[in-house]
Every structure is written in structure tokens, then in C-alpha cells.
Image (cartoon, rainbow, N blue to C red):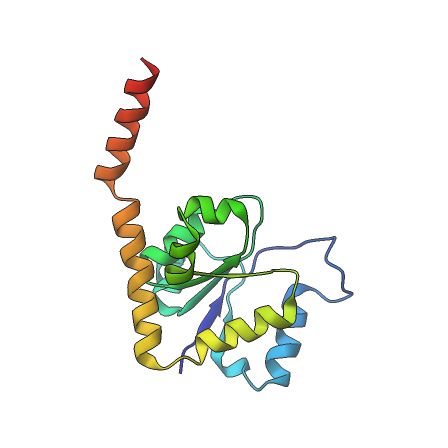
Length: 161
């Protein structure tokens, strides 16, 4: 069975609920008898991030503005990612096909559907989870390595000259 470690440091005053994200998550997890599989870490230091990602099976990344480094960090550690379904995410991962194989997408406004997706991922059999984790790491290693970045920068600079 997979475990999920929450790194919680966000607050959205526009969130349409009288409860915080964390309180609502705790209530739902308790209702479905899943609290033993979740750890809320609060704010953590940079030194702790690697350990958290390596011990996690799933990183939930909900932003519609831009993908952050945490998305790549989690994937590079072999963590499955569930992210907001947005154009920028599809651009970031280069295609809808890639999203399906290494980065699961969800409508962050649909809590019920998102919860079901989280449970489906976490309740996947061991081989499926390990395959998803390996695909996430492979995508980052192949797409965001130093050689590829250097080549892209050289092409950009050459094109500007």
C-alpha cells in the first residue's frame, strides 16, 4: 500500500470553505480511514525536501499559474505527480501524451474527482506504482538534463545573434 506525505505551506483566502485545506483533507482522510497513510509535514527546510520526496509515492501539485521546481524535484526523486490540468502544464511536459504517462492531471476545483484520483493512484498495485514512479524519473532525467539544457541555450543564443 502506498503512503502519501503532505508538504503543507499554502493558504488561499479565496478558498470557498470555512475550513482550511488541511482541515478539510484531514476530515476526508479520517472519514475514509486513510489518516495512517498520510503525513502532514508543514513547512520544511530545503535539506528535508529530498527525503520527503524519496519517501513519498505521490506529490499533489495544484497551481494553474506555472509549474514550479517542486514538480521537477518530486519527479526526479521518482515521485508520482498529480497536477492541475492546465495549458501551461501540457506545454511544460510537451504534450498531452506525456501528461498521461508521467504526470496525472486533475481539475483542482473538483474535490471529489481529485480525491478519487488520489485514491486510485495510491491503491494501485505495487508494480503499477513502481512503473509510474520510474516513468516520472525517466521523464525528468531525459528532458531536463544538463546536455539538453546546454544545447537548448546554445540554439537560443545562436538564433539571437
